[in-house]
Image 1 (cartoon, helix red, strand yellow):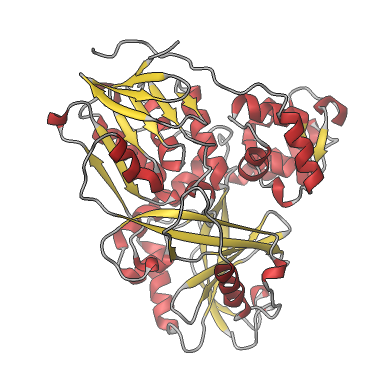
Image 2 (image 1 turned 90 degrees about the vertical axis):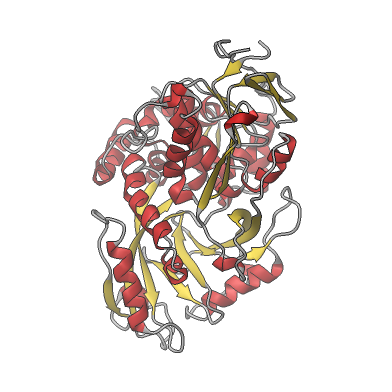
Length: 507
């Protein structure tokens, strides 16, 4: 069971790593993915939860990046309609900041450079009459509404991993890489669980990309800039479904987004991060900054005491010598080791969640020059993620079917099941004819049957995995409920099995 050999070993279980594993496995390669912690435990679960082009990047002339992201926006919505949902953003004109003509010009470009088809275009608003203006201060009279999409970022990562595994990939979490050495035509990979061989390595370690390169004895001139983005969650600030894009006096922007029925998500900050990657938290200064940002717009004022949850992540940005952190490019670079160095390692620098699928496609096609098994047609833009094989317009019908089959579910619980599992909800709930058939009720619709599914099929091991990444039920669970879930999970054996691939690597 030791020393199995793979065509490609992906190191890093964030959105880029899981996207690359899915793409490569779907082309027929034998794929191993190694993650030191839980899937999406780093940057990929600490985003602003948006699939968007990045309206503010137009101001920094990143037209190619915005175009690529906007093209991906509707592609991702089509393949994951359970995880991704359209959202209308209201951008109030703030007197003394960017002029209205500049905002309208930027939104015109945003509507037209990315091939928008299904999402509605920008409209001009009179905020004195529009529903979204009711909660704003009287100084804001004019604004615009435009379209983007919201995403469950951590589940997007997990379902990419699930699809990769369904296509034959081996996914190992809590499996840090301790050694990387070239041996003939292969890489030898040392982990606490086993040793592996692979014909190629993908370094998708995110903020730790340079550390992994040093472990592999590779050299690069590439520099990374680690930028911390922090967010807070507060009780719902508005009763309508519009999100807001607010300009701040320092030139930055902040979003206020309706989230999980009863909450508003506010973010993000941009601060250079110089501390540990294992202890990333929103600072008191950042929390106060976000509160002050929205307080400049909303009639209802908030403070740090209103915070229900705060989270932060470090974005690994390509360092091109920009000044302020917010001006650093959100683009990405792929760097493939020279052929004369032996078995290849491809490193991923930078990127954003919206462009992960296209990044993965490009990464696999670069490796195909050295790993012929990858030289097959593109496919990930046309094939749904698990549970996403339906049209977004059919969601009400699917919800009605779910409630008909499981009439004992509360509608809010059923909606969560649909938005987490899509058409695979029956795989989770099975033939349960009553709440009792679902086993123990941990609270807020989380049943024993769902917990067992998440452990068996989605690599969940801890209460944190389930409450904050497989779901966001941590927003609702109290300490006693979370402890009860922890106690239940402690009875599960640790997942440590390794399924060996075919040992056909050249020696």
